[in-house]
Length: 92
Length: 297
Image (cartoon, rainbow over all chains, first blue to last red; front, side, top):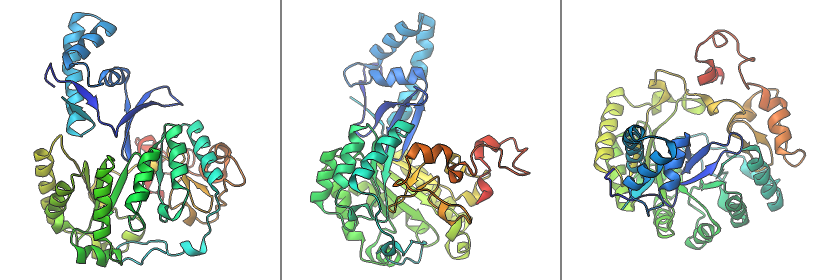
């Protein structure tokens, strides 16, 4: 994911809480993914207005220090790339 | 009345079954399901378009934030009705094609169908709904994977599922006719993989291997009574589409009881729940909590 890309969930995928566990689910056609808290927080920020760089900064601030931010950017980037490949997010 | 098909075991007795659930029953079932933790609803059948109250059902699903998917043959669908469903909040319309040319598709479907299905695909895109095409692969369709990919591209499909026949139930005794050679499957899989790489980000392509060739059992229904509830048109709540073939089980109806009551306490939903029902070798198997003794059927 390029630092200036602005990822956004596609209209036919959406987030909703799992009533039984409180976890966040990403629902789409005939399937769904159970998200861990970081993935859920990431996708909640993917509204098409923030760049990938801004999203990782926000998450790093929420979760901890600079070293964590570098690792998080790599993890978050590959997570978003996988969703992009599956057509679940778009990136402007 | 479904058409007889040379490929699958369509239940042909729908005309002898009656819709037992009224519109308000269906809306109540959706509310009860959501309260139980259900997050998505597949409107299947029979043929869901035979109900005139689909808009109301979809609207309630939307209000409950349930992801709603319409599983239709496409045959009774009109642009007007699909538009009304999109307006009511329908989320997805996966479309099954029996093959990719008119003659072959119509022969397997047992009725003229491809032209109408392609119209439904175009309406689906026009109303801004995601388009998933499902093509069932077996010996007769396996060589047409490249044509299926081309058709999906032309229609602007968001997702293409190339799903091999699973050799369970009806397909198992017919596997001599249906099962392609391992080479044919490998060739089709290679084509699908190349298309997947080429179309990455535009179309998601899924190639599902026959479980016959997989090294592990499929976790049947992701665990009996754990994730899925099937509600039949005549009002039964079931843990699996095929549950009614199990001998000696009395299934319960949503016209008599609340969904939570049936789901938690009925004999049928507890038959294969957890691991206590298992015999050896399942009982001591390391994978018992993963594949849920999926060979029981």
